[in-house]
Picture 1: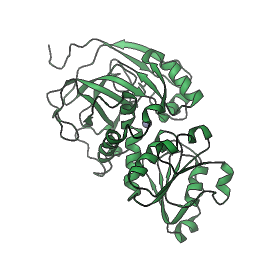
Picture 2: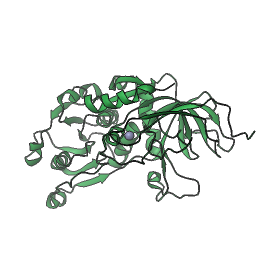
Picture 3: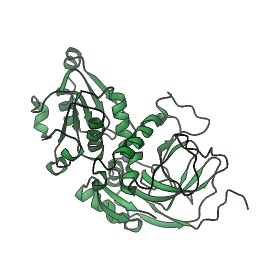
Picture 4: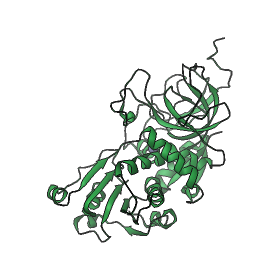
Length: 364
Ligand SMILES: [Zn+2]
């Protein structure tokens, strides 16, 4: 027997075949583990906002895909060509609990820039890849996940709740990237648009990084209730009409947009103090253009920065942030409802209708 054909039982996977179509539940044998790969038993997956966008048809994915990219798991097997150390140089072994980067840069592909590996050619992304044959263990809604070579893994403690650990590899890592591109946070006034997991994580990270004042803005008053618990000094309700007038909240040095809504992004720019910076990370799906007053950008010496996904440094920052703060802020409460893998259909229906911050799927 080839040593890469492992004696693990077949695993279940849930395939998304397109908006409005029922999820397909399959059970299949593991494919051969390739050079440098790591086999993981998936423990828990949270459904990210972008999964919901795909489910509802606002975002295009391959025709058949195993969704879910906020995943936490336990190592079952490490291929002999893998260095068996994690991103922080810690030795890895079967039984270790791990989080991993949402992407893997293929071997022999060079990143366009060392600090932007997430934009490499032929990039592989968990939860975004065509499922075919038994090559289905590449997203969070399956019992196994095969981690490609060059995936950044980080070993984490089993004391971090699974609900919280799962969210590191998308939401928190992306927010860590947003703080990196924002520059120094200490003593800065901050506004965060969007009280989803990205926004709430951003409040907590900015609070821990020494922001002097933090305002959370959202259209949904029930979401704003989380603000104070995650470090906001004040919360404000947003009406689209605010986009046309002088904003009713104080000016800020840094404005983070997690919404992707053109009206909110415009209001964000209008909220910037002299020399301020807007950081946009929410606009990862098509929307109408943002009306930007160029004269305002020039005369107030403003900067707009965008970020999609994150790099390895951000992933390490986010993991350390959660390790230090998972008890300081009630991240666990943000996974408002939990389902089993076989309840995936109900989970997506619930998430799209009730809009909780997250729903979680218990896998193993
Ligand atoms: Zn995501």
